[in-house]
Length: 364
Image (tube, rainbow, N blue to C red):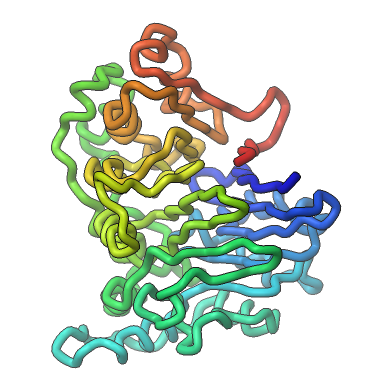
């Protein structure tokens, strides 16, 4: 029997995800997607050492809650793991994406910056963006026109980023990196200081009201540059959405031939930006056929997942039974589990880590 599963390791407010697949349970393959923060890396390091080899290590974008843990990884005298492929768009790839755009579409480039993860990748000698002749992980790289094969039959269909999203990050690259060359601020922190940003636990769980709130799309450039893909193995699919912009992901899915009348069937959606209300649009939900939704966040910093996102998921498909999967017990997730009447009315259940377990695993 084949194996296909997603593990959401504890990653503070970020992501540290592992896809596992294979036709022989004794010879499974693994892909690591992001590595959380520094403290999260220390927790997951024994697992990395025991797994030893990953077919793919994908660093989706430069947000600190996704990439910071890679800095101590690459500082190790002896790397605790090996990656057969690594996907990461550094400043060099942003510049290459800019060069591929028409001159009239380009923005001025800032001063060149080195950054620690790039140096670590170079030192590791792991194959870097090797599936893309240009070296750029982009939907506009020719190789992205078809699914990309990894070991043992898994296929990855790239949905984000585009050249324009990558190029638009260049002018703000320096501003998005702190002293450790990591992005440490997020516009959500500004919103959090406002009363509207604290409404998650105060307005109650009125699904109709929450779902009907106007959708305001995320426009932050680092999130727009997220690497997003559909992983498909043995007829099962999961969409790994990172912190992506929903308009680009929706456009990529429609370009594959899917629509409101021909929806993309998914066995799981790893929800974008930890359930932020600005990253999963009603129009995106209408073109996917999915009943399992995974959220990776401990709720710190930004009060994710936002209740508006979960309400939109529930209202989009009220009749079928749905599963909300969380890798942390925290107020923003527990509130959806503590109301039996709400769960009955909207046909959903919640999954959390087992008692004493670290993180949660989802079998596709």
